[in-house]
Length: 244
Ligand code: UDP
Image (cartoon, rainbow, N blue to C red; front, top):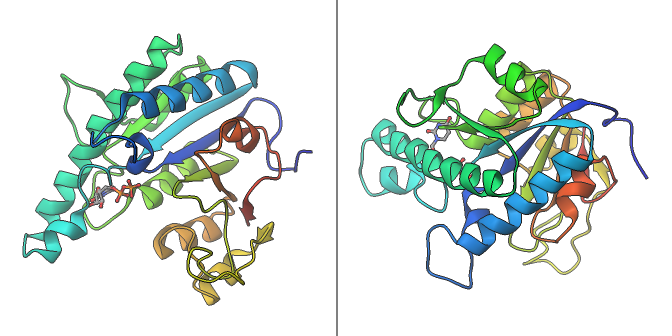
């Protein structure tokens, strides 16, 4: 079953939280097996579906700006540390994708010429057209933002038709309440941006949601950790929740 948000050779942005690269089974900040599993699924999916795929990777497994700010650090400095964390994750993902034969380019919003290409919109699109996976690193390069909002921004910039937000931690979509705390919580198959905002549903931060709403960019929220789900989400199957 497919919906009308995904067709042929369409461009999709996949948002991965940094914590998806870690694992409860190990103490490592980046768990090689978890990264390998993600990379295998991403590479297989991009290869078999005729689509252009960009990945925005978070950094929460390494550092979040609010952690430092809460401990009295300068917020902008702390956020910059968070952005650098996403670069580490992006390099790990690139390495794993390339081990699966998937050509990958890391494009960083913070310039570091020896490590990654700078983010240039037209260059990102060119890489995608050539079948490379583009991994966006360093969010959008500005403190006070998250990689969710960065994913939405990049998706709009490159004219993606869909933003796929992979969750971890067992929540497989958007619920009426937190299903880990409220057993009566029900999952939406589809929900509007307005409802997400008015009911304060947990999908992405409000900045990302309102940006997607203003720019007509649908979001598919799905459980990233369930094997096969990346393919299902990117191929337009109705899994998890569609926000539009
Ligand atoms: N960050 C930022 N600007 C951006 C993107 C990210 O300052 O454009 C910082 C922010 O401090 C954030 C951290 O990088 O806490 C890691 O990103 P995020 O929390 O979005 O990662 P995730 O939760 O997806 O792992």
